[in-house]
Image (cartoon, rainbow, N blue to C red; front, side, top):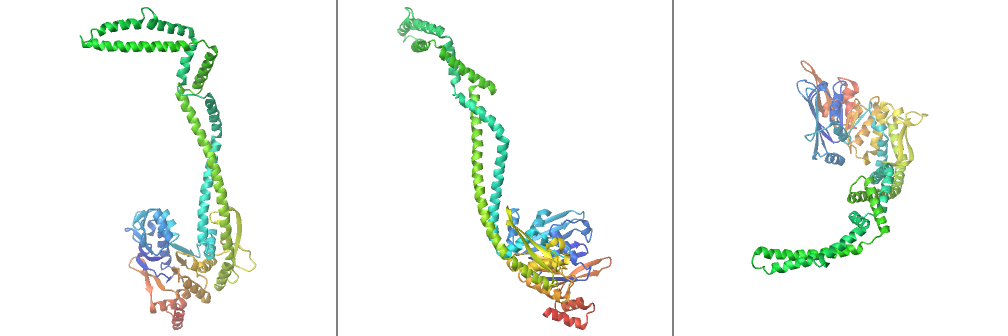
Length: 551
């Protein structure tokens, strides 16, 4: 609730501080005294823009500060999400500098006007006969019906399912769009992959193939070379191995004479082993060096295939070609995986739809049960407020589509006169009718609905006597569970106040200033009597005022 409002240097207000009652606050005063200026200052708290025109004294800044306590839990959630500190008091302050620059603060932390506007929706509910847009909003109509039906837990659960449903739908759409964009490219990649896959490339095979190719192309030359090598190394009368061994024995006989000789002997041994190994290699190669035209053809075809693939993919090695192959393989796997994910998501969406349908039907049943109750109670209140021919009717369609709050499309329709057609409120209800309709609706659901501080700005204009008294009684009843602030010219409404504020002007030397004071006891009786008969009030008016207050 709104605990207090402090206004400094705003319009014709020099300085005003108001402490509100948690129940019914009534504000009265002469026309032009500044009652609407209080609402203007409050609109700054609600995030409306302002400029230097609002400054009472252009040499000083304007300050409007509102303190809220016992506010709805949703406010704390909203603040935490935006990284604001939460405390038992919520202090919102607006400052307008002498240059027209505006600043806004929440618990002394700067904030943007857009955030303030979003926040105060759940703190202040302004109802004026000249501007009531909430009553025209189908979402408000749905909230009223859900409040009466006790549907809030069901709707909350539905919204959670719906949010997941929309997330999955979005994910599916993204996959489908990706597939649509990639499908041509993927066909090409798959073709390239299959070509490389069919080639059955083996890491390191190119070097082997090239060696085999040379061997097969020069079989006779290689064979002769191997034979010559073996002969010179180990078989001729003066073969290298035998000559080496003779030298070895001679060197070995002088092994103790000089360290260098001993080292050379070791080298002789190593060379002998190497010659033996070369001879064995020669034997192996010579044994394999057989002329095989068919195998040579196979090797050359294999080399041609690999070189062709290297040229096609603009690489210079088999290793680079295999990198491309594995990249294609990974991309195809990812693409196929997305298709699997798509099927899984589509299955989830089907299951979520079934759940949404079940939840929506249950919610709709609860809503339809309270249609007649809402129509009956609101129509009775409209009749009590001197709108005997006025009625509301619930227009309901069960949609084929899933909406964020169910499948129901609900509108409260209105007609003001007998024989008229029920139409949307904004098309047929006047300002005064909308104000009284809003009061009737909110008072009907107040016992089951958490409402912010409600401000009613002269919604009793045009009504008097018994009707005004009934309107005052409705406000009084509504204020038992919700804080109300009502600006009124009606003595019957004013008499219902738990706290009565009087707005008046005082002419100073060089300008007019607005003040606000609390009326109690005889002052309050006198003010209501003036509202009944004029100033000075008659004895009868004073007595009548006392009766209204006591009644």
